[in-house]
Length: 257
Length: 308
Image 1 (cartoon, rainbow over the protein chains, first blue to last red):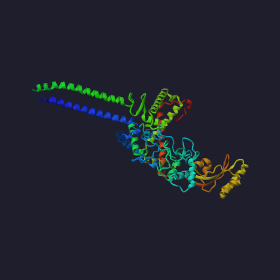
Image 2: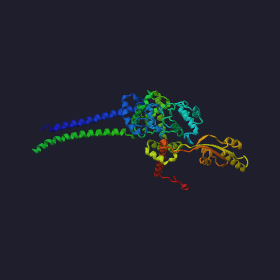
Image 3: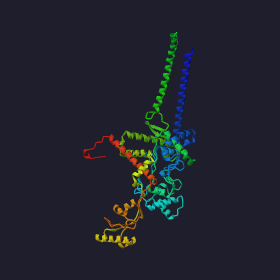
Image 4: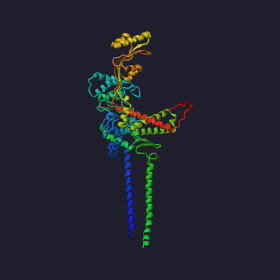
């Protein structure tokens, strides 16, 4: 009975010490998290995949962010959607850049034809079967026969075509700077230009469709101008960088390795 | 007995509880101050002397993002961030700080009010903002189908017209002679005389012979009136002579592939583009409506008939 108040005091001191310990642990954990966050944001983006600690930090945050913000267009497996000309992010073929984290981060931040002036918006595919194929400068429309010929030429870049005369006519229009001027973006070797998002026409990767005559002809006739939103105002810097690392690890790194 | 127990318990208890209260109060105050301090110095919008990790600099509390720095560095030097030298990095950083300082000074000088290029850039940026909002939201499949069904005329294959377009120019005989010649030309063409033969026999000109043309191109080439006649004709048929300032025009239709409606699946990409463009226009219209409603716009009496 006589020890009652002392026992109570001791108990209270233990509880207070416990609380302080919990607070101290919480403080340490918060400080560690902040330090980790700072290290993640301050590291050069392209070095993150080779740092296991930062990589796991990114992957843990990138996966849910991808599921929330990117799945609607790029799909569960980053497979894209050729019907909507949404690029596949899981292959090693990059429309813009080479798949480096820095480049992907820039796309996520500012988008593609997103309305953000820092985003990618240097060119788009003209709609050659319209009176005004291009809105940035004057390009003459192509006639139906010319579109057929260019389509045949593009097909010939991967499979020999029986109508060699059409291939030659198409090649001429493709390279004619006063007509199709396709080389301006796709290059004289038709291998594209990742600095402006012009696809390589000689590989088997198709941004839109499956490489059939109809889908190639549709792209030449009606043009293409895909868009990716700018997330700089919507997502935190950590989430954006984590997303970039996540996308890079799922697809882009293969080409670089 | 009761009093003695009460006295015994109360006296030390009050002493203990006073000390404990003070200690707990002090701990609480310290924790509160720490939390407030963290909140105060890490919250966005508050002044700080620490550069946040996502930024490379703060210029009058305006951040310069590391990712922007890396992009600018790589674009200026043509090297990756890792390849760039320290001197190059510092040079680019200096350029970005310089730009930020100049922008801030420009805002102080209210260039938005006085400089036309700045005004144009701001107005364009507002348009682009509507585009950005439209780009961020994704329409559902049903919304796209509804849009497709509301605008069926937009989603059709491109009509293709192939014609021979002949002209009896002014200055070749009297108007009556030209009218007679036009009737003869039409009869000869309707009798399936070869077009080349008709041209040479009657001394006609042919402004263009482009072969297959999309409808829009044929319309530009023939003009609205002649195009309207041409698309009503079957292949092989010949138009009535059409008197125009430069002469009498006659068209023989060789081929007419009328536009064919596209299925939703085939037109999907176009529908998506059109939907987003329409959404952008709606957003811009809503923005303008909001701005007009909250603004007081006074119009001079001699322009009182102004309506937005």
